[in-house]
Image 1 (tube, rainbow over the protein chains, first blue to last red):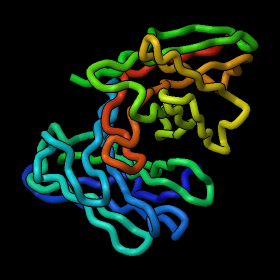
Image 2 (cartoon, each protein chain N blue to C red):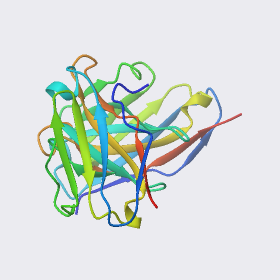
Image 3 (cartoon, rainbow over the protein chains, first blue to last red):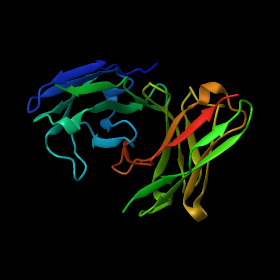
Image 4 (spheres, chains in turn orange, brown):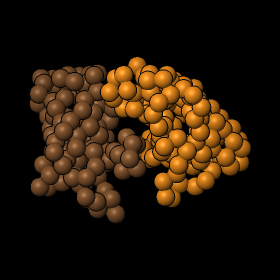
Length: 110
Length: 120
């Protein structure tokens, strides 16, 4: 089981905003950078956010990341039907000496 | 263009061995880690470990240490993960990903996935 906890699902209407939380400990989120990934069924996961709040080239600014203490948050504004996917946080866990993913959150656009 | 291209789907029986591959192109293959990620049916992402193609240094997740073996052939820019004796519980989609491009452990490019089915 994952050491990073996310809500199983979030939903909102098109154009609205959702936030996804990722809760960890001082061994992982508290002392390491957090990344966020979008995973559509049948496709490869896509990196949305790295280093807590940076976006790779080509990722729209509708996606944002933040971190405070041992928790991180992904925000998606201007929700679109194409945003329906599973979202995962990820970070290094210094105690495990392993990269860990969150439990995953399914985003539904109503 | 950075690409990671994985080998095709595999169907195996319990106890059989298997080696799947991930070929990188469009970047200096030996300069960045390659990680492997598992997704069991209906489940989330799990990290198996990483290998550095430059010197074959490997780091395994404690959950997968001893269960899989990672290797690389840098002459053909290809990373591998192998099983010596498959179990039904190894049935999953396996992804490779480039890790560390931005300086931490983020996975910025991913392969298309290799579906491994283990069934008698």
